[in-house]
Image 1 (cartoon, rainbow, N blue to C red):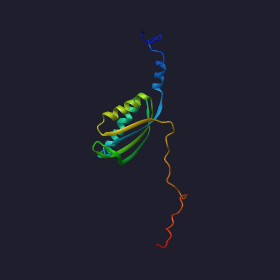
Image 2: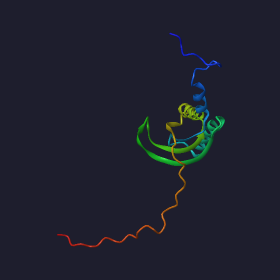
Image 3: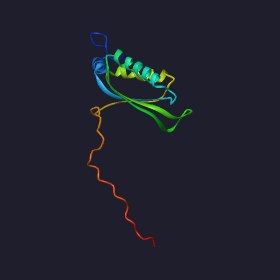
Image 4: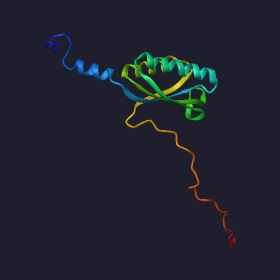
Length: 144
């Protein structure tokens, strides 16, 4: 049985469509967790390196949210805590794959996840204003 016939340029049918999708700019949300011992300077250097991975792939780092040190839901290796950082990206799929490759080879990163976004990037929400009802002390009742 012969393989699928190639078109005039030697590409299989449908290849061009996949390549154009590959280069399309897509919004991603990427979170990574680093060791809790990572300092602020180390975190800044990590974020800069990850930004370089995105920009070298023709993408943009739209927003960085550093959540700081938090307790992990479950132990990962020997770690119970981790530094969480959330990145919002606008980049081609190849740049997102390169970012995940850099997560994988970096010893400081203990967990990561990158997902395609269907919604807009959330804006900062101001703290609740005076709409919150005022708390009253509990009423005293007789114990029986």
